[in-house]
Length: 185
Image 1: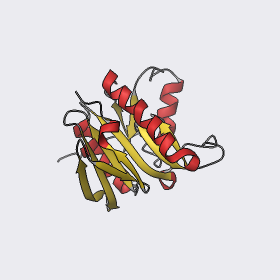
Image 2 (image 1 turned 180 degrees about the vertical axis):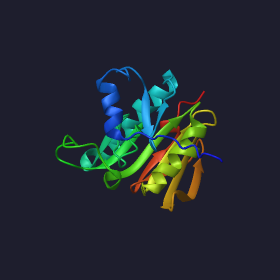
Image 3 (image 1 turned 30 degrees about the vertical axis):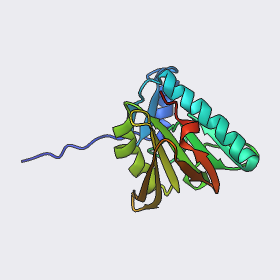
Image 4 (image 1 turned 135 degrees about the vertical axis):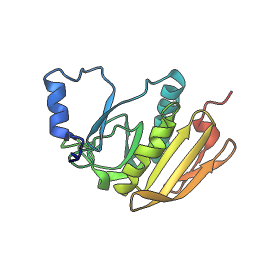
């Protein structure tokens, strides 16, 4: 007789309890996605510089219309709490002090991807599409491109456009130069 083997997924409350009792350490770089804990890749200097640069550009470009969050948690139900590099959120007067943003609060998510490119495409893209995040950007450090995924339907993005050096990306009716975001050379 065969016995089925199933995973024991954890929920957000258990994830926080693990941190509270010291199983997860404060300096652990982790994300809870679909009930599983994933160790995040270390942040290299180029990755950090692009995140900082992009946050500064977006804050200037979009001013006080939205909230730009950097590497902070999002609440996607009881089994997922991703921490994308940048989240563009609908404006909320309390800056989401009352609770982490949920999918309906998001306008776009941006990930800067070096060694995490496969994870960002194969795990995070379906998660974000499933939660109907309107736009998901992957800034590919290896190829110096910005991949913009949009039109989420049934766990996948139906439109994918890749922007290269010298091109412009449209974000909320504003133009953003690829060269202004990437660190080339």
